[in-house]
Image (cartoon, rainbow, N blue to C red; front, side, top):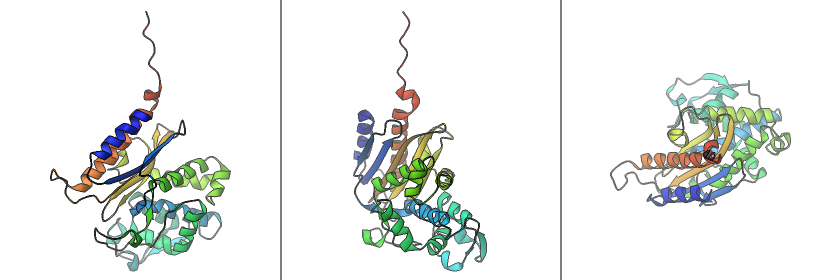
Amino acid sequence: MRAMVDQMEVLCDEQPFHTGWYLKDLESGERAGRAAEVVVPSASTRKVSILMAALQAVRHGRLSLEQPVTIQAKYQDNDSGTFQHLAPGFTITFQDALVMMIIVSDNACTGAVVDLVGLDTVNAFCRAVGLHTVHRFGIPPRLDYDHPLDAVTVTTPNDQGRLLGLILAGSTDPAVAGRLGCTPELCRLALDILSWQKLKTRLPSLLPLNTRVAHKTGTGARGFMDAGIVYEANRPLFILTAYTDRVPDEMPDGLPGFAAANSLIGRLARTAYDALATSARTPALATPR
């Protein structure tokens, strides 16, 4: 663990922008982090808590996964996802809106979901499960690079790691699921939806092909993020949440800052995978004499 953390720190130290991360080894329970309690813009990683607040509402009968959701024109003035480009007025199910909100970060769906669940309800959910994440809108406004933190939804790497850990534990433990106001079945649905993620240029980018990663990316005016659970085969291996902030448009070598941030998050995930995968934990057999 110590050698792995040292490698991850070196990767972050090499960059001219802020990076905070939280990591939990799901076999040993050990945790590590860098600036893991520093408040940063959440970008679309906020949608994990929106998803769980929505599933809590389903659990308590306030909403239904099968109920229709109409994508109105008022939700399409955004620049994330695909539904912004379609003719307004079409209808999908609430479950499909949750899926699109996560797997392609569709903000038309996010706006509709937040209106149905209620922004105050989403914030109440976060407080109830011990998160410091603060939601400020359904569809984010277009902001300049130098926007203040209080103009956006904010979180910490610790917050997102804690939430993912609760969802994972809740998928098999009814008591933990109950803390989320959900059932194990709804927690498993959340993990499935997160694992259907189509935006894979960060945490999954350097992992072995077809590695399961239940995660949510985020792209903000000044940073790039990803938060997820990485599996080895069907076994949850580790939780890693990584947040960059104050990423320059152009790096000193002339390459785009977003590419450097994406690459860093991918390298952090690969460093953890190489240290924590089964092959890394299994001592080599002694050579026969």
